[in-house]
Length: 88
Length: 88
Image (cartoon, rainbow over all chains, first blue to last red; front, side, top):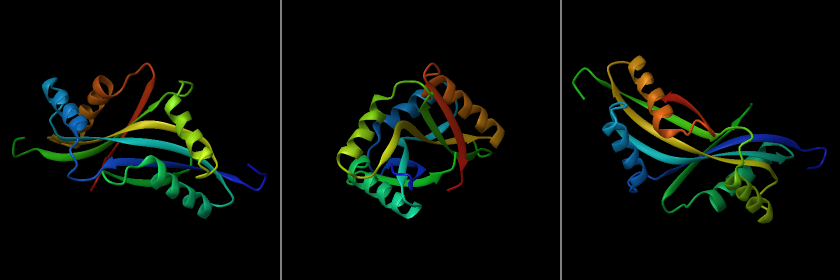
C-alpha cells in the first residue's frame, strides 16, 4: 500500500443460480418449520465476503473485486455473484 | 399459508464477531494476494440466507425472522447477525 492508495470496502454476495439444487437451504427450511420458528416458504443459503481493497481509485478497486469474484470466490457453473461498496 | 397471509422476503447476514479468529477469511486474503488479483488488506467470510416468510403482517414476519436468526442460524457466542427486508 503506497501513500497514494485508498482503502475501499466491499461486500460480495455469492448465491446459487436459480434451479441449482440447494440441500442446505432445504434443510434450514425444514428445521425452521419443524421447530415452529415461523412459516418459511423458501430458504436459500449463500456466502458473504467482506473485502478491504487498497487501490488508487474506485475504478481500479472495482476492477480488482470483479476479478476476485470471477476467478476465486465464485464457481461460475452454479453460482452468481453481486458486490457493492460499503462505507462503514 | 392461509389466504390472509402475505409473503415477505428477508436477507440475513451472519458474520463472525470482531476478534474471533477467521482462518477462512485469512486464507482467501492470502490467495488473492499470492495470485495478484488485487491488494486486499482484509477479507472476512460470512453466511448469507434468503428467507421467504409467510405471515399476517410485517411485524409478525420480523418477529419470526428474529427468532429464526437467534435460535437457528447464528451461534451467538462467536457470530453476529443482521437482517433486512428485500422487495424483489
